[in-house]
Image 1 (cartoon, rainbow, N blue to C red):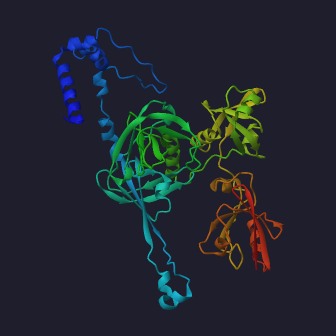
Image 2: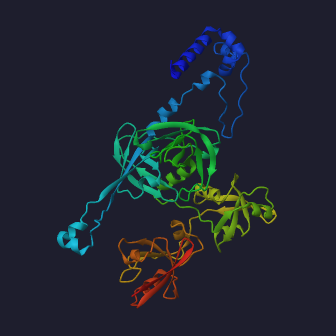
Image 3: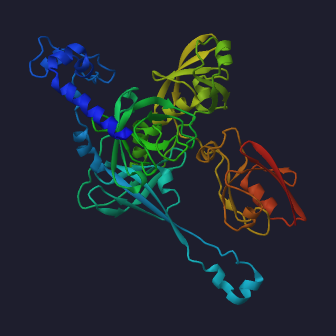
Amino acid sequence: MTGWNRRILLGAAAAGMLAAQAPAALAQSGWLSGIFGGEEELQAQTDPPATPPAPSVPAGDGMNRALPSSESEIKLSFAPLVKTSAPAVVNVYAARAVPQRSPFAGDPFFEQFFGRELQRQRPRMQSSLGSGVIVDPSGLIVTNNHVIDGADEVKVALADGREFTSQILLKDDRADLAILKIDGAAAFPAIGIADSDVLEIGDLVLAIGNPFGIGQTVTNGIVSALARTHIGVKDFGYFIQTDAAINPGNSGGALIDMKGQLIGVNTAIFSRSGGSNGIGFAIPSNMVRVFIEAAKKGGQFERPYVGASFTPVTADVAEAVGLDLPSGALVQEVFEDGPAAKAGLKPGDVVLAMDGFGIGDPDVLGYRLATSGIGRTVSLDVLSGSERQRLDLPLNVAPEVPARDVRRLEGETPFAGATIANLSPRVADELDLPQVLDGVVVTEVARGSFAARFGLRPRDVVLSLNGRRIASTEELDALAGRTERGWRFEIERDGETLTQIVRG
């Protein structure tokens, strides 16, 4: 008899012995107690309890949270939530044409025989797959920006099989969110948006999306952590972490709560294999709500301008200022005549809370400011020296002073093909540049232009040209248009100063 057969027979014999014993004897021996909680629990399946169970402690949002108290509660299903929420989760297909260039293009020998045919290569279609959530019956869909970034065409497939060509209303690379619009004869199934601020660690959640393109899939898990920052996804720094399985293709899909409402948009996973390791991240619904409102108004998603820069509070700084924990946003610099300066913030102050919400680091502060919206006035709890103060900070759009004066440079200069603009707080915010910079910034570089050949990139700040400091687009346009024997220019890129010398 083989080892496998011997194990099967032994297992069958053990099962027969257990079946032959009376349930009461098994309960006394502890077998059933470990599974069902003893004889009393079995009795409770048919008889009503003598006294009602103690009520669970209500959470901050009024929901009762309690551990399962019986086998029947463990058998509860998520099916009702899925039936109401899943129709609002869609598949998003993005396609773009990628130009192809023959490796022999530009070679005089091959061009002698084939001519321009080498340059007439058909573009290759590149596609990406993700998920989205219908958040308004009119056909508004929220998804991740990285799902549709650079796409020439975006199609949406509903759970019932219908397909629509969508229009991109709004997208933001830094927030990694995009709003699509589809049109139909009837209202679309939409999902409500919950308040993500009431979410707690340990709450049950469902993730719905289209992983690996296999079709709509539902997974469940819990909220593993809140306010996750520094995970390396764009510059957005405030995520809900969940262990619900999220895989490639789930991006832009729904993370829903036990009321069937959208609590987050699934965005990223932490994985070395490319699949789910139980560490997924979602953008909170409160951030999504502000983004949707901006799309409905037909504008851009704008972050409030504070007029100050912040840095995390380290353990040494916390000890120096008298804080028990290294938490808060340390004011590093305050810009003259900005909202922060007018509110009374000073370098060295520590922002501890905003509107009653604790501020753990500058990323959390940025999230709270962004979700508050333009036009409001928020309350900051600040540690200034040894005193705690409460300051009122008005939230307005960043000023565009000086005017951007966009220009495209031409001619036979190292800047030919570059589009430039004057730096202002608003332009700096749009390009995610430090507010302390001024002068002229490169916003676009044409493919194949002189500017591209000499290494200029978008977001480069032009500091000087041929020894002269550049203060405006008008000045750079005039200097670059001169006939010179050569050019020597300095640019600032990601905090580093680079020097380039080009012969005329």
